[in-house]
Amino acid sequence: MKPLIKIENLTVGYDRIPVLENVNLEIFEKDFIGVIGPNGGGKTTLLKAILGLLKPTRGKITFREDIDNRKKPIGYLPQVRHIDKKFPITVYDVVRSGLLMERRNNLPAAALKTKIEQLLSETGILNIRNKAIGELSGGQMQRVFLCRALISNPKILILDEPDTFVDNRFEGELYSRLSRLNNDIAIILVSHDLGTISSYVKTIACVNGDLHYHRSHIITQEQLDGYNCPIQIISHGDIPHTILKHHH
Amino acid sequence: MNAIIELFSYDFFQKAFLAAVFASISCGIIGSYIVSRRIVFISGGITHASFGGIGLAFLAGFNPLLGAVLFAVLAALGIQFFTKVAEIREDSSIAIWWSLGMALGIIFIYLTPGYTPNLMSYLFGNILTVTISELWWMFILNTVIIAFFVLFFSKILFMAFDEEFARAAGLPVALFNYMIITLIALTVVLNIRVVGIILILSLLTIPQATANLYTNNFKKLLILSSGFAFIGTISGLFISYFLNIPSGAAIIFTLVTIFALLRFFQFLRK
Image 1 (cartoon, rainbow over the protein chains, first blue to last red):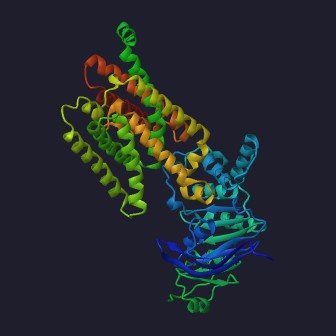
Image 2 (cartoon, each protein chain N blue to C red):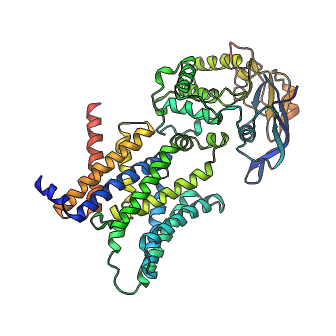
Image 3 (cartoon, each protein chain N blue to C red):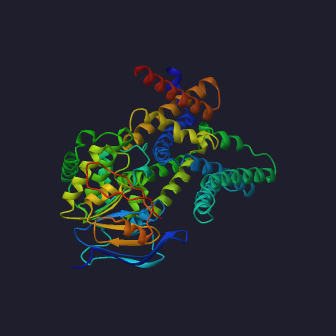
């Protein structure tokens, strides 16, 4: 099986200062990769390189032949803290903007409207479609951006900390939704919440200046020690988890 | 009422009325974009830098608006260059171009032999002295702005809201940004005659703030802002004529009064 995305010897950063060096990773169909690592370790940088927002200094990222590179089949949910919440835009328009990812979309206007409204309805936010984003709660905001990421029917879904500013109920909903979506699409998820990650993802990528890939969702102390991957641990009582002591 | 009808029979007033219509549409649309993107300060820098071009035009003896366009575009590109390439903080880059343009303007005008009669009308505007050729330029600018925003409305909205997402989707974001910054420069320069360099920021922000009291929808914001700009400019124009006070100042005073009253009514209703 050929990978959807193949990252080879990737070095990438800002203003000639590398954040990530010599990263190798293959992303296959139905993968569910949890990306963990400390702040400033390069998690978001990795996502941006995959999305084509940052040019590699060295190495390359290639997409499988059947994936039209210009019409990227990638759904992207950025960190909401970077979104201007006072911008005059409605929920409906934010979701509609997700279709930019599907550039040669020739859907007629009516079909488009039905498609957007159906997705909003599945996500339980149809009733707020005409609200400005500034009027939403953290959970509603994340739902809107999840819809924007999904509206283009992506083959790969990239989420950058979708569990910030949200309530527990949304978090549960989000992860069970991701599990269902994972039957058809590959998911790359960045999160600080190691407990949640290890109970939903299939594999783990530990990013801290470089990348170490674990073909398992169980994080052990040895792995972390060996790979010099200091991370913050949040424990949960009601889901399977591994609690680790502080390490360097 | 008769006095108003009589006013419309005057040639200078007809021109001023048309200038008010054109200024309202261009500033309403471009101002909404500026406010939404939070680039009011950049626009202020571009506006004030254009004074250098006006000074140069006086000294060298060519059309002041041409000089203003030149300096406005130069400042727009200069701010981008300082920020992105020379890695100077954006607000500092803006301040440098803002004050450099003003300083050059003052030097050029000081070096210009003789008296410079129109200087005040560039600084503070005088809608009653707008010429036919300026009106034609304003008409062309309005046509370009309306066409650009109608044709690319969704793309402009999506890019303004989340530039990174638009880039990931493969939109030519840099090209769009250059086109829009050029439109901002042209809008500023061609509306200098209406309210002047020092006061133009008001037409780009106050009607938008007023419209924002009623809508959070970008499309409605464009239309409502133009509407409020029109009400403010026309009322200001009448006040200026009947009370015999400078038109630019009268227009801004009206714009602020409308905003303050409507904001106060909104406060009372809550």
